[in-house]
Image (cartoon, rainbow, N blue to C red; front, side, top):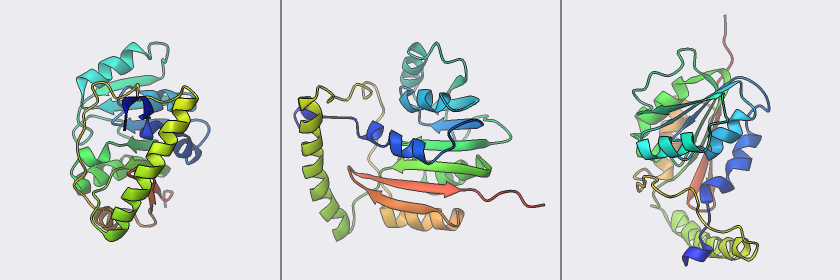
Amino acid sequence: MPRALQWDHNAYYHDWLLDQIPRQGGRMLDVGCGHGVLARRLAERAEHVDAIDASPVMIDQAKNVSASRGNIRWILGDVLQADLHPDGYDVVTAVSSLHHLPLRDGLTRLAGLVRPNGVLVVIGHYRAAKATDKAMEIANLAGNAAMGAYLAARGKAGKPHDDGMPIKDPKDTLAEIQQVAGELMPGVRIQRRMYWRYSLLWRRPGATY
């Protein structure tokens, strides 16, 4: 689309994501935090937020616009290897970042970081493979253009948080994601979404004694 009609698909899902998590308290982790837009919104609810990204450019930019947020720790590193909180998190989020990791390793790591009774929320990308995926692609193209025109008419279009953000095409299909997630996280809910996305929601069962 023309640049004037482009818009932020990730931010579109932030409100939905925030509706899935507690309104107050706890430790939260944002994986692939980018410029820190979501991490700053999480910090309005959390006692503490760890925000991690493998890109030094993203971490530097996030720090520069978040100096007033004293309850966010910005971490440069690979979530698969990083030294994160040993007791885990009440909320773990990952928006457009899981496809940068090996699927099984990434999901295993994210699920392992969720404390009992905690929640994992992912907005991810998948590789179109089936006829249903192709049909959704057509709907996405039409919906994307319509939303871009709507936002542009109200002066809200543009993708201000894309500068310097690493981009990678997804290699896992939605069926593959569903299979691996179902094996690792019984009860996980995965839903195909508009604008080339899917959502994954999993609540870790409470501790048993």
